[in-house]
Length: 164
Image (cartoon, rainbow, N blue to C red; front, side):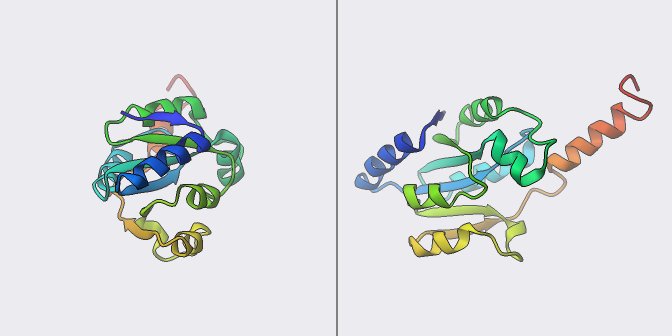
């Protein structure tokens, strides 16, 4: 199981991993309302190397990206849940709206994004290519998303107000 660490701690550990010849995989996101789709994605990301590091958007970053109603779960809870997963080695909280600084600092061997990025531009792509990082786009497990989960909860429990 992993742990939530500072970027400085992750960078120091990354240097040790590089010396040991370990393949480091990196991904990032909000990971709000952790669900089976997230687990599938992280399992497949983890299988691409020996160490999986997750960049976790802070609450402020999540609000900047998604609006004032996000995230639903605070960063401490999201970090704790992610770091408890067997396939996760480290979680690094970050305040920026992109993971560019994390990529430049950690220089992972593999950068993983969701397949929905295959048809759009994303700010970290150029950085990942510049540092020689292999990019892997993984398709999502069909039928699972945080938005869909929220819609289901609202449909089931808020039809006639909070008491159903």
